[in-house]
Length: 145
Length: 145
Length: 83
Length: 83
View 1 (tube, each protein chain N blue to C red):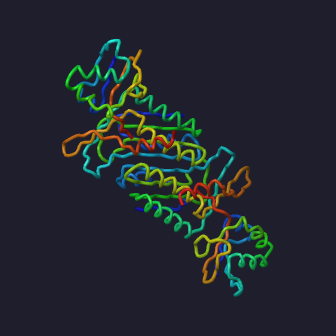
View 2 (spheres, rainbow over the protein chains, first blue to last red; view 1 turned 90 degrees about the horizontal axis):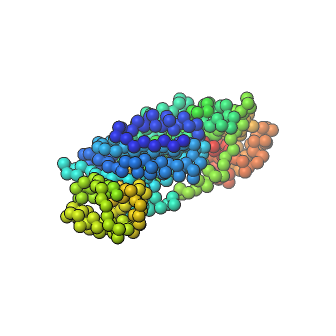
View 3 (cartoon, rainbow over the protein chains, first blue to last red; view 1 turned 30 degrees about the vertical axis):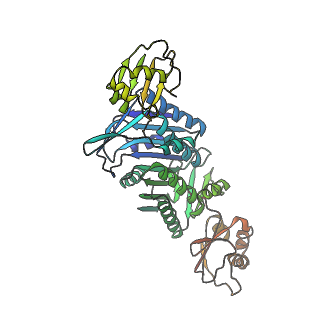
C-alpha cells in the first residue's frame, strides 16, 4: 500500500504510525523531520510544485515498495509556513524484516531530498532567505541508484 | 539523553515518540519490531537476563549516542508473553541531521539483535519452540564495528 | 506553452506563471531561457547563472539542454530543498 | 559461584540457577562446563554441543575459553534472539 500526502495541516504522527502498524508486518522504520530552531530560525516556509510534487512522492514510495518488497510505504510532507518544533516530513516503511524497512526508509528520505519539488525559505530576525541545496544530499541520494 | 526500558507492559509508542521529539532536534529515526502472526505464531515469549539486559541496552544506546553525536537514544524492549501484532522493541535516534539519526537507529537495532541477552520462544498449535539465531544478524551487527 | 517559476526564480521574474508562444527556433530549455531573458530585467537576472537553475518539462525533471518540442508546461526553479 | 542458565539450556539443566564451588583446576568456562556435565544427565545433555552455547562472566559476554578466576556469576545460554 502506498500512502502519500502533501498538506498544509500539521502531521498527525500517532495516526500515521498507527496506519503503518496496521499493515501487519514485523518491522516498521520511520523518519520524521522537524523544523530546527537552534540557529535562530523563527519560521520556515515550504513552497512546492502542485501536481508534480504528488507524482514525485508517489514514485519515490512506489519505487521503494517494489525494490524492498514493502507491505506499505508512507510519505507525508507539509507545505506552507511552520514553526520550529513542527514536523516537516514523515516517512514510514513497513516490511516483514528489519533490514528492508530500515533501508527503504533511509532511501525514501534521501531520494525525496533531491527529487521532490520543494523549496524552503527561512525567516530569521524578520528577514527571509531561500535555503541552498546541499551537495551531501546529492551524494546520499546517489547511494540508492 | 539515554532512555532504556525493559518491561512486561505494552510499549506506548505515542509516548515514546513524543519524548524523542521533545529532545529538540531536526531528525528522528525510529524502528519498531512487531510480533508477526503470518507463520502461525499464536504467542511469543521473551526471556532475558535481568541486570545484564539493562546494562547491554545502556551500552548500545550510549555507544550510538557518542558515535553519531545524538541528542537522544531510546531503547524500549518488552519481555514476557505477547500476542501477534504487539510491539516487541522500539528504538529511536534523535540528531540534528538525518544521516546520523538513520544510521544510529539501524546500528542500535542491529547490535541489539546480537549483543542483548534476550531469547524468544514461539508457540504454534500449542507447542513451543525456541527461536534459532540467524547468521544474517551477526553480519548486520558486524557492519557497525 | 505554460511557464512556471518557483522559489527565488519566481521572485526574480516577478510572477509564478506566464503563458508564452516561443518562435520555432527555440527548441531546448536553454534556448527558451535565452529567449525569455530578453523579456524583462527580472527574467534576465533570474536566468543569468544557469548553474543555479533546474527545469522540469511536463512535470518531469530534465537537463537544461533537453528538448521542449510539444511541451505543454515548462518549470524553472532552483535545486530542490525539501524533506 | 552463582550459575545462571537461560532458554533451552535452563530447560535442559532443569533449573535457572544454582550455586557451585568448582575445584581449583577449573579455570575456564569450558572447564567449568566439563565439570558441570558430570552433575546430572540434564547438565550433560545441555552442555554436549559447545557450538550451540554462549557465556557471560559477571554479565559480560566471553568466549568459552575465557578464564573464570574471581568470577561471581557465570551464565550459560544459547545465542541471543531478541529485537
